Figure 1: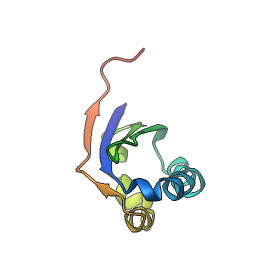
Figure 2 (figure 1 turned 135 degrees about the vertical axis):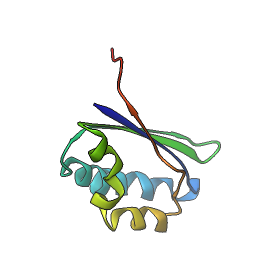
Figure 3 (figure 1 turned 45 degrees about the horizontal axis):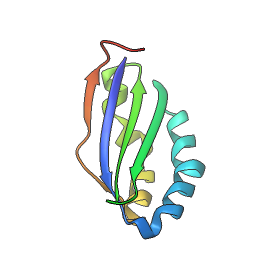
Figure 4 (figure 1 turned 60 degrees about the vertical axis):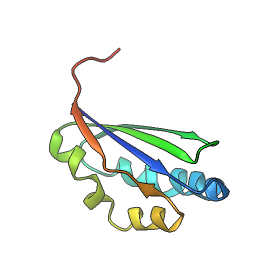
Length: 95
């Protein structure tokens, strides 16, 4: 298993749009990608920063998410989301 961590910045004025898009478009798209296991996100509303954590079957799946999501990433960027480079790690412990 592999964990992918991505930090973001976003415009808090567009937060409700972002949350709606995440629930209606982004998460359903993730569920269709081979190797997907789980997704969790969190926001710091005071700073306009956030993090997303996803779990994948293997490194290939974890690294291929941007390509697999296609235009979804562009739609998030249109909602003023800026993605920092993601990091992928092998899961070595879990509770």
